[in-house]
Image 1 (spheres, rainbow, N blue to C red):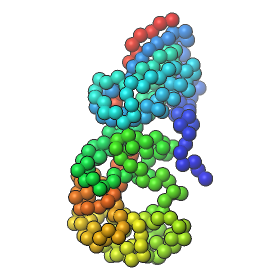
Image 2: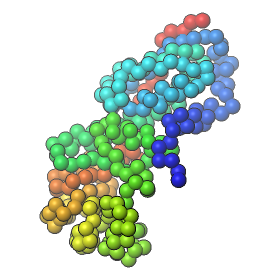
Image 3: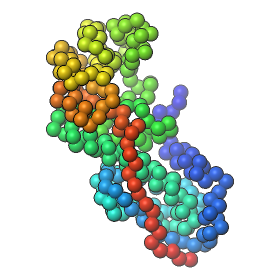
Image 4: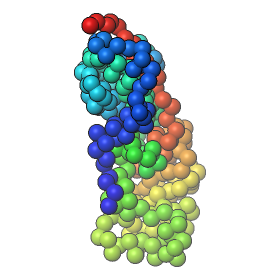
Length: 280
């Protein structure tokens, strides 16, 4: 079975190899091997910090290694101009590791920042859980899921092994919602099934699905679904869920809202690395 949570060192080493290749030729010829330096990582826009653990490992794994000192914790709200880390070590290593480390920071902080926007918008609806999806960057799921948590969201299933979620293609293969749910019962796990009509919702409820995913339903349809369900199952709204759509779903009374955009469409949060001093 493919690992559900790639080791952080493997992820970081892969990213470094991708950028480094046969060696950093610019640094090799421009920066002396005996030159030491101190640099700071500075936020160039406001948001929520995430990815520092990966960034730190980049500087620790690069050879010769550097010391990375975090100046802000995971999940901290940061403003433009804030210093989030200090790096000390061989200047060549600092410059070689710079882009890979910043890529982790900007990607994960972007996810955390977008998640925080959704979480803040839904904060008035105490019974609604904000969830991510499996629409993640290949190889980076564990980091991106951590970024969602840093932004105030929650994680949906980690992969295909830890929860049953019957999608439309499963329903088609099984011959209907009821048949699919009955078959899934053999796994002795809670069953979630996706529906896109109120008729399918009735089928799911009749066979005792614990969670029903309402796919691309309008706010009016979701309100009706809440009335029909009457607490017999948890209802999850999903499908192209914008910030406004998530709020509308919460108002409709659903229990869960899953948002693929948290990981597949989050804009990067900008950071820079600034060398403050050098010495030999």
